[in-house]
Amino acid sequence: MIEKMSLDQHEAQIIIATIQKELEQRKQAAVIAVADNHGELVALLRIDGAPLPSIQIAANKAWTAAREGKPTYAIGQAARDEKNGFDMAYYGDPRYIGWGGGIPVVLAGNVVGAIAVSGLTEQEDMELAGMGLASIIK
Image (tube, rainbow, N blue to C red; front, side):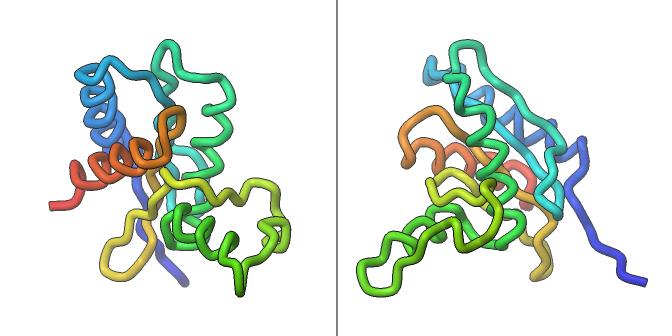
């Protein structure tokens, strides 16, 4: 039998609260998604005023980061590489996304979930997702 650890709603609430507080301090709006080890949503929050497309984008960033075990930014950079780049459609699922802002949560070498932010600049999305990760990794 295979037993896999995964983020749960308790960790998701901590992550979301951390990022939400930072967004409120900055007076910004975005969507925050937290996924389990399969990339499926555990929690999602759309701050009032966040762009509607960011709902699906955040969910897809979290899904991609969990499934691939790497930041979505790195996947996007690899796809756009001039010499060895590839079409994201090669993954075979339209949920794969290569915009920064999705990061895996890795514990003892295993992906236990992912955090994603969408709605701001790519750099801000990545920074905020990192803050969420720092809130649960001790």
